[in-house]
Length: 383
Image (tube, rainbow, N blue to C red; front, side, top):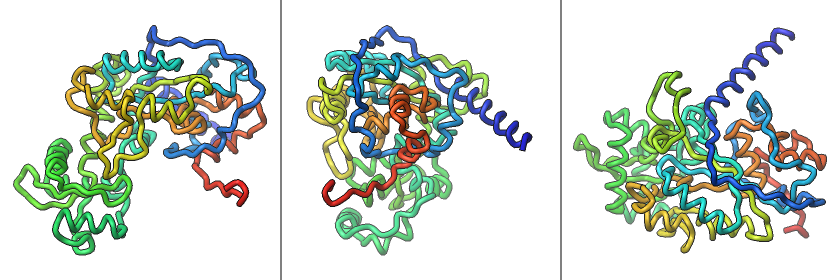
């Protein structure tokens, strides 16, 4: 038993050391945090819906940095109406101009930037975080079958490609199988995918599952491929392979967008000034889905400006429709807690919102259970 405990301690120490190297705090003068008034209640955010959850919630307990993060304010005096969100910029949108403009927008809405971080691509790959921010990874890798589709999507398949889905489904390949079978690279596959999309030869079969009829670089035509965009986007997140010394020596600069990883923010604002929903949809511009829709962001929002004026913000092209985190924001306070724990290797007790829950008697095991996105049964009166 003592040997098992020693092994567990060694594994925990290794994970803590990895977290320190993979998560780098970005020093910036844009941070400004106002004192919050005292409040008596936690608020009614515990059961907010979680749309994307950590791959391994139990590991959150063992993934904390060696030195506990000092809370910005004592949990006992934290304002329950103060929202705490986690926000990400993808490698494609992480430029100085985007960050500067975003900081101005947040300041105008009285939203505080508490901290900023760079999350390395190595950590994202090791902790399974890529699929949190990119559509359809399991399907692209061939780890998940599409199965049957509904009649509406089957009709779209037939109208687009001229043959029925049931007749063609056995010939549809995952992105990874396509690269292996036809000896093409992720960038070549992505180029073929984009050509097909512009020619209206891509259809959505299910949420996060797209099928394209592609013509490949080697001259092969009429190849049905699932989520052919994924491998190239994943490479952009993970970054090029490098030695351990190169990973440890990476500087947090604009070049990180070419080396993988993501720029992360911790945000705070008072609920009365702007609701959580308004912040996500009206301020940032997140929409629920871009599947079969021309709407990629809310009109007047920062994300819509990013699509419209991408060149003025230092981008070479508009963000990809398949990239969920051109700008990604937590969908609820509880999800924000789970994401800070998972992405920043933070212990629940060392997160301000987590400390409030624990201080009000919510067991840590219960919080971890919520991180798993459980089905909540409501009474007839509640529904």
